[in-house]
Length: 133
Image 1 (spheres, rainbow, N blue to C red):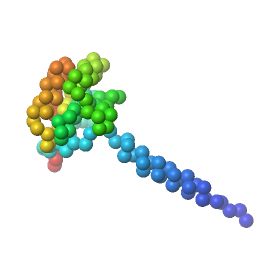
Image 2: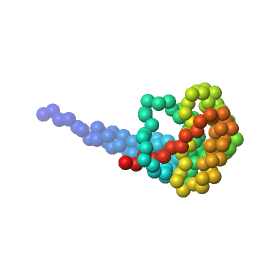
Image 3: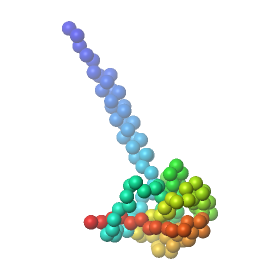
Image 4: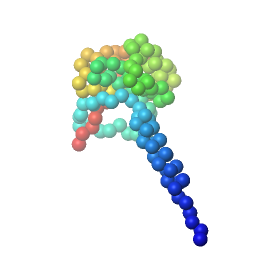
């Protein structure tokens, strides 16, 4: 009588499941911010990857552009933010530049981020909000 033993396959599947459950939260990129909500249109997905600066609830800056992102939980200081933005705009001068500001952050921090981006050579700076219906 031929019999198939599936126990080793179940063991492998359980190990893979555990590995995926542990690594999936680590793959999430970016900083968690609570964006202000507005009525408007979403940005089309086919547009270029933007140079994105995030201002968290405490007024700290995080940089994100294509292959470079701030390390999770490690903010960038003003001088480094300007330098990173300059490098990004040198690589792709037509890249859109946007600021994601937490809705609880003081307005002054968002303005500081925009001023730093202009200092780095950004001609236009947009603001990202969460679109509501």
